[in-house]
Image (cartoon, rainbow, N blue to C red; front, side):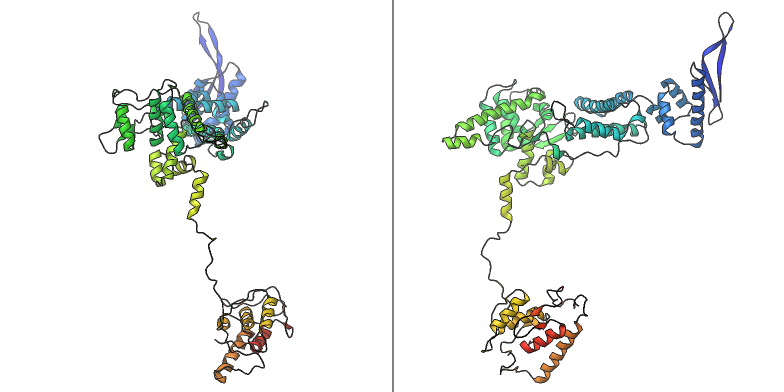
Length: 569
């Protein structure tokens, strides 16, 4: 690499030097290149050294580092294009070196060519431009996710005058648009990676500023009645407004889609009749055909009878006046409803109600788009399958249909609870754990069970309840299967009628099982899998109160069981 100043001869034949210094170097293909630099020699030498680094990256097929890329963005555009034409820097590096304002102009043209509406293009590009300018981003290398997050957090703070800051939903829209712009930069080959790809949107449910509500069926009927008898508003007669509201509630069409309808949009020759929204006016950018109710189709046929096929169906006012027009008709409907009160008490109750109010106690509002919410909510109330409701609403996801547009009221939720079983009815006959005498088992602590056993044992030998409670508490599941009615306590005359040999054999088997369950001192009680476990395992020494005190051990339980009751398998 060498830096020199070129010479030339003027018209008089005198030798002169050029004002600019030149850089001479060899590119990756060993071809000599000469690039005009600056009028200052030191700046031109710095340019030559940077170009040498770029040639090294070209030979090694490496991407220039962040520092070198930032330097490239400061070069004049013509110099960058010259280096790009020689292949020393990639085309995307040349494009990334352009100011972000030029990229935004290209992004706007790309959105328009894609078929987006003018309002959508202006809104999207405006949000991106506002955020980039506020963050001070001039070139692509300046874009940083941390700066975007910090600026949005600053915008969400309330002002010094107490005015609320930006809502989370609006901040999410800005995040979405700047990510869309950066993603377009990558797809168009102007950048390698998006620096804001990892940004996520926050939960907008915690900061809802405008929550719509769906009108009840009775509210919709009264709204249509008030509109039909009301005066002309914003250039629309009462009959036109009535048909507009009804069509919006029964089809879910948006205001821009309703504005585009003509007589030719309806087909009454088939059953059911349909309305078609052209792709240029549909949010999904495709033709949407929706069915119509038979009653509504009859009214529409008469409504459109005098209109030309290409004539607009409705002469809608500007978008910002639609909500005002609807709320005026809603106010007339509420005033008529209040006058129908029969008593003063009913009048006060109606005035405190949210019925037909444009803003209820929960700050939920009614605007023209709320009629679309009414359409989807009525589908849900009618038991329409969620997937079919999504198709009629023309939503991309079922989540949007069921979460954002479906509204339920407290009364409907209360009615849904009627499907749950009634737990307050009369209880069935309590199942009784008994022996052969039909007596119920008394549940409780060890002391309570011993007390019941002691109280139930008398001279007449009727201690069955006590024996049963004792066996259920301290015997395994096999032994607690039943207790003989005539099982006598020590001293009673009645004995088991079975042969002594079988009885002794069973007692030995029972004793061996009890011995196997005996636990070492200081350790956890041993268990035998599926057999009944001791209910108070952490108590190593409960004492039975009665005729004598026994420390409960495996051998002690076996001895007491033999003395107090004879268990029949």
